[in-house]
Length: 535
Length: 54
Image 1: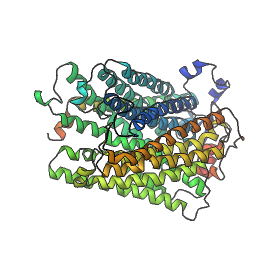
Image 2 (image 1 turned 45 degrees about the horizontal axis):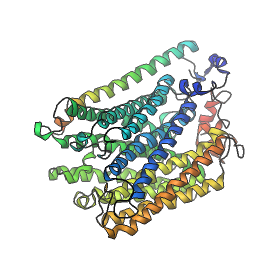
Image 3 (image 1 turned 180 degrees about the horizontal axis):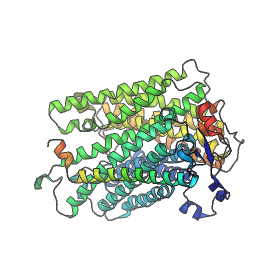
Image 4 (image 1 turned 120 degrees about the horizontal axis):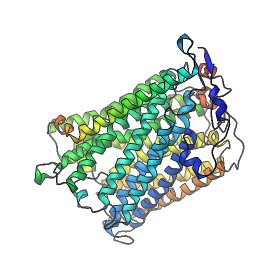
């Protein structure tokens, strides 16, 4: 296809603006990616500190460090901050950094909106965190915000709801930007089916976000009306139904799980082929499996409500539909294994994290199949078994993929190789700490220890102590990650080549660019069509 | 907008191509935003309750 040169580039010979204004006013996808990732890292540490307060309290039976109400505030805020403040923004950071160079675009399609979608986030986070200092403290109902319990909280409720609205707006704006960028700014010759898996998984995630975030916003708006305007959407005394809120919440909440895990699938699908020195096995089936998972995520929400009670045919439907998700997920897992099969494998830090992801996510998936059985779920529900399950999928899956992606692309972003020894140390400490933290929680749950309770019966002590020690190992290991990233950003380390990883050029357009990528016009001087054809 | 973009049909200039692309981006973004808004209103109108047959 013929091309025309862009004369507009001459206006952009300058580098980034200086000082704080660069970060406030930037419309550059790389800067905004950095902002998202930095924000996510800060929130990860804040949410992690809350988790450590929870685990410190649970080190022994009885009440030691915090009062029960504060403990419940910690469980609630830890979840909200980790989901909305850490994991989702981290993936948005990866999307900002990597989608344009992966599809041969110079930037995101709507750069000003991109700036806005990031800068909403810190305000939302401050609003949410500020509720801790309000009269009566933060809300303590758990992140699910179920009425009527959540309606009993004072000033914190409207602030939390406003914060959720802002977080939702930010996610929707970012999603719109990603969809428009992928549909309209792909390089000539880069067809949809040729597009890298990371972009595909984010495209499907963006659609999920646009379809479910407004439903959450609607549900929490109704909570606000019930609290302040005397409506009774969820108040049985006024003819409403609290179970309706649960349906609305989980219509958002279940796809939310896939909003977190699909971009993780995308990152791992980029990394495993690179370190296996083979193309991704069955890429088309991977794309369809991702789309099927996205679709199924909309029609299984009530498996979170088996214990609430519903007609048996409905239970059967949600049970079988939930089990069906194992099929496309299995396609993905087997394709990753087949990619590695007879590959020329090496185990640098990104690959270690990707394999850690694979082991932990599959383990979390298996316990998920256990809980999809409606009768068995009555036994597993609302105890530490489910806490272990979702941490294996969301931390073992989501967060380990974030670590994998960070080590994989950090040399491309900074132009400096990270410290491989420290990277591997970070992986092993994280992996061991994580398993020590969450594996015992399966047994605690099966033995009957309820979740969201600051005290417990004395027979649960040993497993709780193991879990707390694991939490502190996993938590403090992340300070090592901060140090590794800091060193890399400072340029302390070996200079990274453009390709970074051996043979990476055949795994993505981004590896044709120098490291670090130019601030403006990443692809200037690069023959994109040749690079697309070579892939 | 694109550093290297396909030559528009009929020999249109780069500026015209950029303008066309911006319009295309805007329409798609507004369309997606309207879908999100519609879903918000539907949730508020309790349509989901009706769909669930409650």
